[in-house]
Length: 87
Length: 462
Image (cartoon, rainbow over all chains, first blue to last red; front, side, top):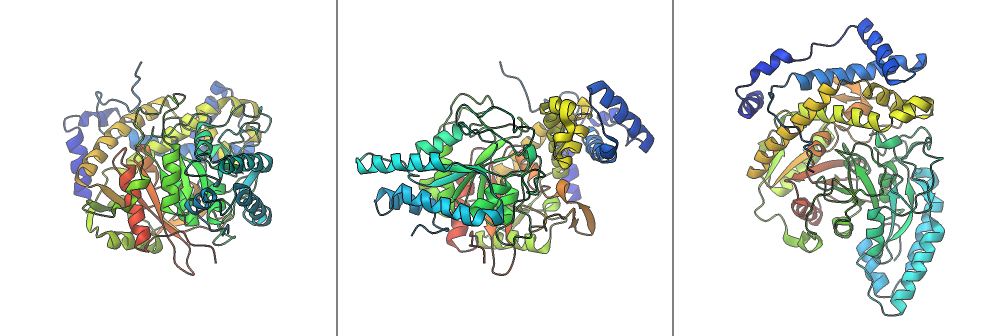
């Protein structure tokens, strides 16, 4: 089963493993997430009530975990996105 | 005749044959809503006057000898994100309550009524469709007709409760990550999420434009196919709708399993699923003679990508409200939207690249197989208020994980029928039947074969 998955990855883009080098680093520390939420909220004009903050950070952690997983997947620079604009 | 479990096809036949009037059908449905909805909490709006007026008009047409549509006199209801002329489109939110009423019906409401069906109301749903539970902070939780202490699933919660509870034979719903398939599974009814771009979304409240689908839920495959056929056709108002011909399926349901190549999904789609849910898949596989196992490569990655696109597109849609009135959201929805607003764009762009890659991988699978069988949810209906579920030996948050088996398929827009497996004394479970894009005929043909074999059926609550 695991072998099948690995083959599928390699079959898709065999020569573009270098993408690993550009991957997003692993999750931030608690302090870094807290600072990130503060700065992002300010930049976006959002107010994060103290009562919500822990849950927002918990959700953001999940999103960054998914983002890291996605970013680490080797596809390479020539992979087209699904959303291709057609005039 | 005219009981709560009467199907759309039966109703339409009786109305056309003049053994039942549309007015009698609508009056009975309104009475059932009045008596049973308080326990289910499925409806948020009942359009009684409109429904009775349309029923009277239809009865007049029939009396005058005019030809009426295949859904003549069939009552239906819609998730409250569909526009209904004169009604505020709530999308499950309190923040929309002050919006102006819709100026016209949604495209699919118009098409159902053009086929003779009669809109009878709008249905409860998870706030802004960002939900798998069926719990709504503002309107209350929907209750599963098979066990009122349990979730319907969401976000098309009212649709699941109304159809499974015998209030209407057909409901229209949306599915971004599983919102037709999850409540259909937990409530034990049929559903179809057509191919992305098949049906017009014009006049429906969006959630994630690049993943939003609309489709019907029903208690029989024949009714599901009748509704799906009525819903097809381009209206030019949904830029994501594909230029596809209308491809009717109702006449193809009797073809049976035939020589279709059918596999069962392994790997990711069996990991963590409960014994009940896997037994449902295995029963369907045995009935269809499907013994080969196929693995969708990187299904977890596909699900992660869908998760990111959902959070970020949804947050972008609601950024103005998040700025001006974040306290007005359902807390469970608000905190996810706020987090979604803070996700770097590089994650999302990569997720969209993975979407194309995964679609190509799926195309290879569906070159080898006509259909693949998968579980719909990892567990049967959880208790209302439950916060976690078990995936094998792991205890995980319920909201984020009830749709783990539906998300990878909607991520690449595949057509999926949801087949209910019901047994006396047990909660229903659902099986997804997936096919290549535009092959709704395959998934509905297999659904009909399973129904004929008595393996899958929507059964009345005990």
